[in-house]
Every structure is written in C-alpha cells, then in structure tokens.
Amino acid sequence: MQSTGRVAAMAGTKSAVRWKIFFLMLCLISINYIDRASLSVAMPLISKEFDLTPAMQGLILSGFFWTYAVMQIPGGMLADKYKPRIVIALATVFWGIFQAAAALCTNATSLLLTRFGLGAAEAPIYPAGGKLNAIWMTQYERGRGATLLDGGAPLGAALGAIIITWLITMLGSWRLAFVIAGVGTVLAGYVAWRYIRNTPREHPSVNDDEATYIEQAQASEHRAEPANLSGRSLDFFKYRSVWCMALGWMCFNTVFYGLLTWMPNYLHKVHGFDIKQMGGASFIIFFCGFIGELFGGWVGDKWKAAGGSPNKVMRTLFGIAAVIATASIFSVAYVKSDVVTVVLLSSTLFFLRWCGLYWCIPSILGTRNKVGFLGGVMNLGGNIGGISVPLIVGLIVQTTGSYFLALMFFAAAGVGLFICSTLIDYERKLPV
Picture 1: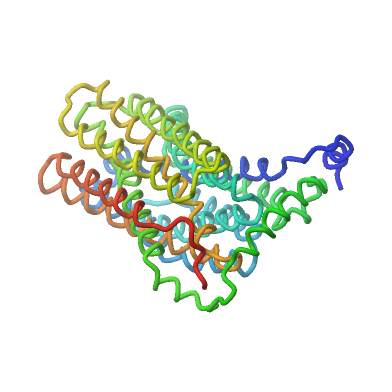
Picture 2 (picture 1 turned 180 degrees about the vertical axis):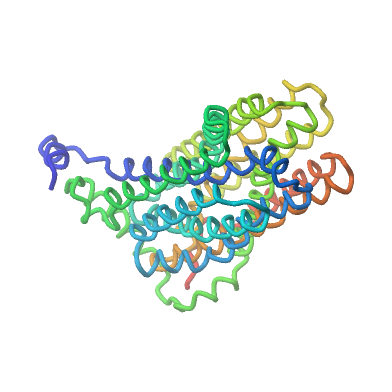
C-alpha cells in the first residue's frame, strides 16, 4: 500500500480514493464533451468551408449519436464482463484518435465518418462509469457520484466552448484545434488506466477503513437483492421502471443535446453573436448546468441520508427540474433581449442537469451483475434523442427559417421528462 493509504490508516480515518476516482471521471467526461462540442463550435467555419446546408449540418451533428447509441448496450455488457478500468481507458484513447483524425477531413462524407468513429469509441464511458458508481459508492453517496460522473457533460460543454474557440482563434485553424484536443484526450486515457481500479481492495492508495466501509455498505445492499433472479437481461423490459428510465433519459437528452448541437448556431443566427460571443455565452450557460448538477446530487444524497424515501426524493427533485427547465426553454422563444435569452438558457441548464441523478437508477433497479447493462439501456434511450434532435432541428430550421418550433419541441420533451420520472419506482430492485 502506498504512503497515502498508510498515513490515513495510522490516523484512523478513511482514505478518500473513491472521491478522487470520481473527480477523475468528471475530468474524463468533461474531455468527452469538449471533443463532442468542438464540432458545434466550429460548425459555422466548417459549414462555410464545406458549403453545408442546415440539413447537412444536422446530419453531421447527429452522426456521432448513431454509433454512440448502437454501442451503448454492448458497452455496458463489456463493463460488466471485463470491468470498468480497461473499458474506460481504451474508450478514451480511441475517441482521442478519432477526434484528431477529423482534422484531416476535406468534405462532409469524411467528417461524418470520423463522427461515427468518435461515437463508437465514446459509447462505453457512461455505462462503465455507472458500474464504477455501483462498485465504489455507498447508497448515500451515489447521488454525488452520479452527478460528478454526469457533471462532466455541462462542464465539458462550457469549457469546450471556451477552449475550442480560444484554440481556433489563437491558431487560426479549426483543424489544429481538433488535433490538440485529440492528443490531450489520448493522454487522459493513459492517466485513467494508471489510477482507476475495478475494486477498492485493488487500489494501492485505499486504506483498510475505506475498503471496509464500502464493502460493509455493499454487503448490506446485496442482502436486500431479490432471492430468485432470472439472470436473463431481456427480462428487464417487462418492467415499467426500465422503460420510463430509458424514455425519461431520452427526453432529457433531447433538450440537452438540442442545446449542445444547435445553440451556437441559434445565438449566431437569431441574436447575431460572433464566435467569441458564442464562446462566452455558451460557457456561462453550460457552467450553470454544471453547478446545478452538483447541487442536485448534493441535495439528493443529504435528503436520503436524513431519512427521505427514495421515491419522494427522486420524484420531487426530477419534478422540480423538469417543470422549471421546461418553462425556461419555452420562454426563450418569446424574448428578444440577448441578456434575457442567456439568463433563460442558463436557468434551463441549471435545473435540467439535476437529472444527472438518473445515473443512480441503474444501481437502484439492477442487481450487482447487471448495472452496466442497465446503464447501456438507459443511455441507448437517451441517445435515440441524441440521434434525432439534430436532424429534427435542422429540418425545422431549413423548412421554417425559424427556431420557434425547435424550442417548442424542446419544451414538449421537458413535459415527457416530468411524466417518465414520476412513473419510476425508485425503491424496488428488479429480480433479473
């Protein structure tokens, strides 16, 4: 055991490696979203260089999600079978390679192919992260674990807007910016391999107090699992909670990915923002989402620890998030002020990102050997929204010449999020 673990043990306190691992996961997911968001930020330049129509832009922006969605369940099954460490490290390295390869593209077809590769490579990261949450966190810490994991999405989107904009401006080339982002991602994959472990006992910096604390909490949780498990993963689809989990995450991602992929163009076309203004506004909006996500995870864990029932805690938090986010995005369609628009979009993201708590649901519903699979199912549903929303918004904008109906589409998805979130039973582990 390394010195940090020994010192903590001598002091009689638990080491905190589980929180360091999830801080690393926050960084990896942030990098994930920096790489995703890079195309949206650079799209005004790329569309001009490649002479792309709005519909073609939507097709390219959605291309990532096609392979990303298809690989969700296989990615979750890989995490269940081979454990999270190797899956997370290899996924990170390969998506960095595809991110850098986009710099070599000369037309829409080649760019679309690199987005396919990026989507397939990034797919396992969330199911494997959900598996890590089930392995390393206790039931009163998983809300914070889930929102640290998922908090990388708005943080990465915020930083991506700033970092990619800065790189493009400084280097005078979106291609060089993509290469630098890709190389940085490959290095992050190496760091993940060096630090992450599949169980607390395997980690050299975990002291006995932390390992025992996690093991005792999980043993108690495992004793509460149903006695007669079917063992058939497809049996999950017999249960309403699984369908609502996947559909609710699809509605969530419809709003989030809609903003991630089209908001820079919206701010440019409707409000006249240049690339620097887009970068600044996007940072503010998505950083508010990051703060909201951490806040939601903290409230959820504290409320449960204070005795709140899982159904009461989760349904209340998701209900508040869905209602306010829906009202905010609906209102964007009716305001003209640049400042008010940014405030409303910031409000949308702050409350919407409370739903990062959805990443607790696979470990709530699933037994220990099925968490990765359920995470893949949930993210498959979510990324069906990711596939469809850039295309739908692109067609709406091209057909109507306006973003009004696109914003109404996002508001309708917010209503769907509310309905699905309230129909999940957060207190029943499924006998599969």
